[in-house]
Length: 159
Image (cartoon, rainbow, N blue to C red; front, side, top):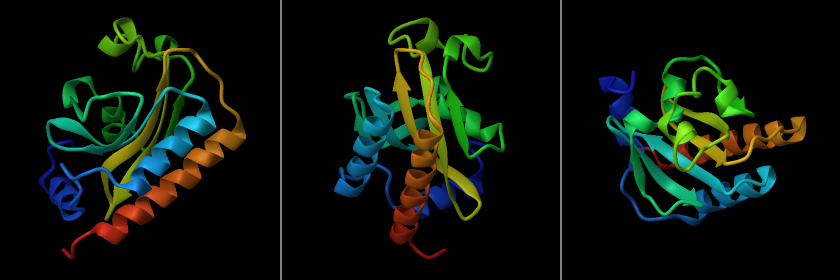
């Protein structure tokens, strides 16, 4: 799924990969980090071989390799929102190198960003502590997901 030609063409039409920071995406990341009280939040685009961070709070990297992507899960499930209170207790993440090693991620939540029927990215958050979330926080994730998708759509070049 990650290497699907149509999906990658859709991602390219958004004209966001490797672009400068933009306030609107940084605001989404900051709002998400604050709403969930987590140290790491990002707007992430899922390229062929990397996750590229359009916006990132709490990590100084601009991208990470696809083979360590937490967000890869969206290519293997139908859910649009995922909340994993304890990554060690979830078999999909328990053996992940960033769970069993530095930075020891224990909490992960993410929302699929779709465009033209394809998964192009995610809004995601991480913490090194196990955490439970409220229904209100999940609602915030849902609302910010929709805002991010609207922002992406405004940027897209015609097919």
